[in-house]
Amino acid sequence: MNMKIDWKKELKESIKASLWFMFLTFPIMVMKVSTLHGESGTIYRWKNMIFIGFSFFILSFIWRRMLERRGIEKEKSDRLKTKILDNPFGTKIYTFIDILKAKPLIVKLLLASVLIGYPFVFSMYQTNIMISVLIYVILGLGLNIVVGYGGILHIGYAAFYAVGAYAYSLFFYYLGPWFMTLGIDQGLMFWIALPVAAICSTIFGIILCLPVIRLKGDYIAIVTLASLEILKMVLENWGKVTQGP
Image (cartoon, rainbow, N blue to C red):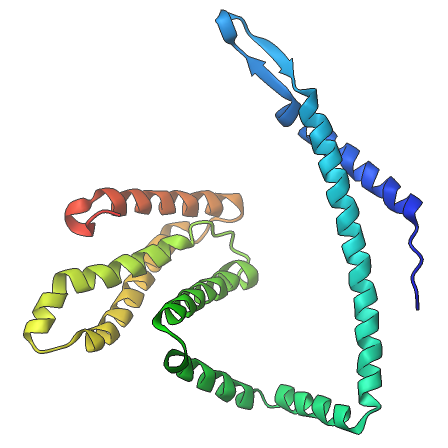
């Protein structure tokens, strides 16, 4: 089914969005206070307004077209799926997909096998990239629990990550030589330092939670942001203990 584009409506909506954006950004992008030669005055940068209006008009128009195209592609995808299901082989493919959805344990086992075999197939560079990706996935999942499910506007979430990272590094820095004298190699030290870092981060979270547990909304956001900045300053400037940044 071909969808007819109402160009007049699209242009009208894009112009309306552009005018609203020009109105909202006028004090920031157009007006400028000048204090040259001891005299204050206001300079109006009309070129900025023209540029902003034209740019936002183009972006708004493209965005609307992309949304329409997405709807068309979804309709095509549904028709293609129906066509595939009419084929016996296509039916088997979707049956296999439904089986995987119904048995998440199989999917988890397949995913685990891929992750275990990844370092043996790819280079160390690619493995390090994947390690960084998975670390940030863990951070995202944790933030989703606090903000998404808990509804707590926690802005200083990275503070827990900082405490864990510094605890892990300083564990190696201070206790690494002593462990090595006992004949413990770095591979085993990793599994010792990892839970230690997690415990330190948990303790810090409990200490931070106790005074702010009764706060809500913007107040907890301000306190958590302040705690993050304080911790950042301590870690970067307490060089004798943390070794700086």
